[in-house]
Structures are given as C-alpha cells and as structure tokens.
Image 1: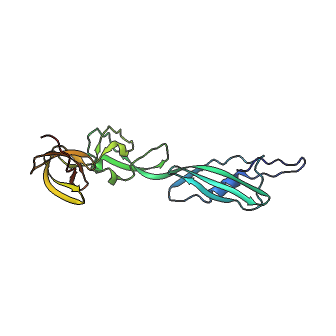
Image 2: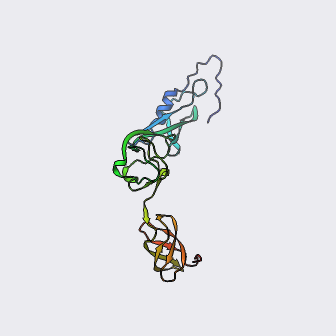
Image 3: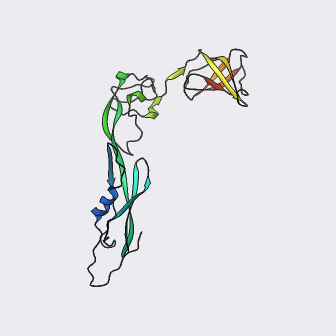
Length: 223
C-alpha cells in the first residue's frame, strides 16, 4: 500500500472515490445464484490520489465466508493499492425440525421440512437437503423450527448387536475374510467389538459403509 501523499500548498488535489474502489472490487467477485457480499472499502479522501485510468482489481484471498480484493492504480503518476474485505453469505434451503425431536429419534421424511434462509459465518454448519438427514438418529433434542446441524446427528446403524458380519483383514497386501458376530451396534466409521466364529477370538474392527468390518489381524481381546 502506498505511503501518504503530501501535496504542494495551493495545489487542488483530487482524491479517489470510495464508491469507485468498491465498484472495482465488486466487479471481480465470484457470482453464484443466491450469493451475497458485503464490502467494507477503506476511506480514500485525503490520502489516496485519484487514478487517471481504470482501476485494476484482483482477488487476493478467499475462504467460505470471507474474501479480500486488491484494488490498484497503475498509472505512472499515481501508483497505489488498497484491500477491500467482503463478508460472504448466501441464500439456501435449510432443513428444520417440523416438531420437537427428542434424543434417539430416527428422522423420517415427516420429521423435518425445508425453508429458505440467508446463511453466513454466524449461522454455522446446517443441513441443506432432507436426503442428508433421513435415517439418521438425533443425538440431542432439537426444538421445533430449529435447523438440523450435522453435529446433531448420528449416522444410521449399519450393524446391530448379535448379527453375523463379514470380517476382513489386510496384512502384507493380502486380504483375508472370515465370518463373525457383532458384539455391539455399529455405524459407518465406528469401532466395534466382533467375535470371529471360527477362532472365537474377540476383535476390534471398523465398520465400513457396506457393513464389512475391517479388523487388525494381530490385535485381539481376551475371550
């Protein structure tokens, strides 16, 4: 950013227009349906000399909720750069509880509904599609009309205690399979105890999305 410009006494200096800086910055903002940006350009009067040619603008940093644009003047007689920060928000459908959802509730299609809202950094993470939540279990009470958040949900049970499951283990590039019994309920990505029905060993395994339990062949528990 340029230093403060000192003008000779008696010279009528003209200063860059703050709205012009904002307009230049806005011209390079990425546009998607429902996007909204709120810019906060710095003041220019008294220290940023008016640019005699069109301003240049380029995005200098970008994240989910914020974006900064570098606006510059490249005229030989007036070179400077300013940075204009923007806050981003967008309008989207969000999933809300149709009625109070108690802990342990398995969400059905009639448990929730959608509405359109402005989402920003203060909103936090929310579910935007009913398909994201159907079949999931509520892990804490959700009041009527409140948004459903990913942290409010547990993935559906894939394995139930007592069920026969396929056990797989990978060692030295070789995959071995065996049948087992689930000793507890399991969701995708969770670690559960299983018993190998052939060796009767008690093992810890990780549940995959297709219901297979991947176990460590060298780690077992006392029966």
